[in-house]
Length: 223
Image (cartoon, rainbow, N blue to C red; front, side):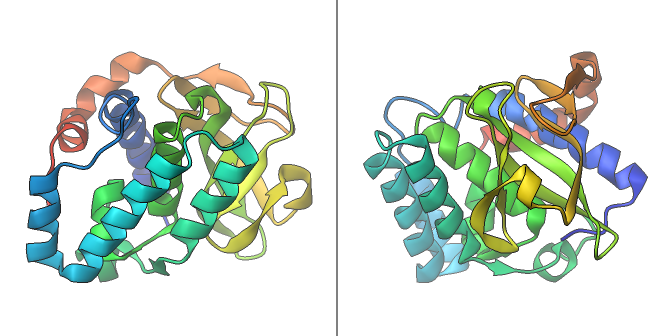
């Protein structure tokens, strides 16, 4: 879970949204492949375990791009939920940090937004329609704390399935009474949440120009 303040939450959401618009063209494509030079740099900086995690990620995407949506959801959720949870301060030495999937896998640790973002990009890279996925901001009611999960919609009005780093099973939103959805977002827009379906489109993409640094980060192999 994360303890984002309202100010940091807004900054985080707009940063992610900006990155999604650009990064969807970086991590997707008919033939997903990690840059070999980047892999060598990852191993040199973070060790053999980081290299192995990246290779396993690449293999997952390449081998399972023709599976059913449910199959992909289960495999991706299981793959990332094995990674150690840690706060941004513990991993990066700062209060709030948005890690790319490569950074998340290199470090081998991250917090809730890192899991949700990594699952999003992985599923899109496996051929899943981006329109079916939302990175969703929720309130964890029992803990009274902000949290991020990934939600999947089989169609726009369907009840979402919740992929949560804190719960290994994938459950319909109606079964996650411990979570109160606030809004979700992907590369197509920012959506105010409602009980069922995707909710109402909100936000203005013109605001994203404030986050050029985040866009740059997602388009470069920065390690």
